[in-house]
Image (cartoon, rainbow, N blue to C red; front, side):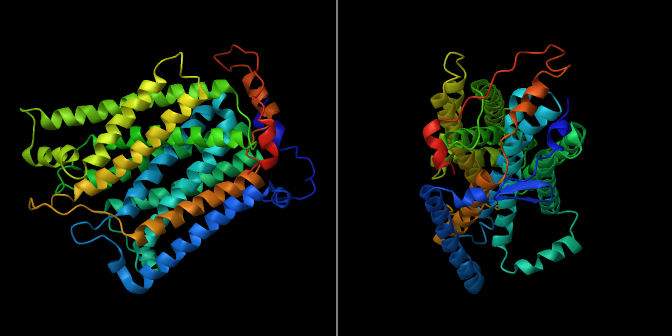
Length: 435
């Protein structure tokens, strides 16, 4: 039985539900939302307004309100661009594993995963726009692209990937085209996701004047750290959705997710170790590269990079033992540790690339200004507002009959049907306060 058989036969909308572009938007849920929900929305709206005022200050006074300078032309916005683009990888990996590899245990996450991926890429693109003093001139980059600039490729890939994510979400929510169309959309989305993360890494790796970045291993490190942090964030959001009564998941799904996370974390740590070893090995070391990488441990930036190694190793140590991997507290702690580790890694990687200029001169450390921080908070609040509204309005919970139909379909698990396990019920006290 296919997805279309469940989704295309749609019942009439309930009171408060508006059917638009084939999706049932439950605006009635907003009317019954709890005071805590609206308090959180008000907090996000306040942060958005603060960021908007900071952005207005930037537009009127120019780049002088930023801490960026000639020796640090990129700042917090580029750190967040790399970070948000990377986080979007987790959603796509989980979504693709369902429709390409038959990992049915992740099907309940598919709608949430695709929505998160699209919103995160939107946040990354907003970071680029807020760095422009004349954003209305961005059209010229599209009309007169410079083929030698990696930003042309990563920027275009981000825009296309974001549109693909929202198109995928529409397919999942409406059921149009059934499982066949969802499979085809995944075949389109997965190569674009790899292309996006690869071109983002190339923005750094193709700078031969920056020896710290100019390494071929930069691309696989980007892919593994992006996948690991994205899976970790998806696990955190899934637990949050379940705690608030918005969605329901089986404990086995979280076990599978934590196993996948542990696998990708150890690969990411291995690649970092290989890079450090090859740079400092006496017979393979390049003086410029070694001097710059040494600053990760000796300079004022050590406080950002050393925790990357400690948090990464700690997260893997928590998830490695099978006897504790299934515990929600262990899963959430490890996921939070790695989400934080990758942000510090992105910040250190961006800032340390400019710590020594191409002439070998040291530059004072970069610390973002208050205006930069408030603009970054504004972009974060936009993403959280979208997710908060979607949790109420969109049908993110995959129907249980669809999950059971695929779990018992012929060919699943190599042709061996398994007895379906019911979804874990949401905590009863939290349901009235959903949001």
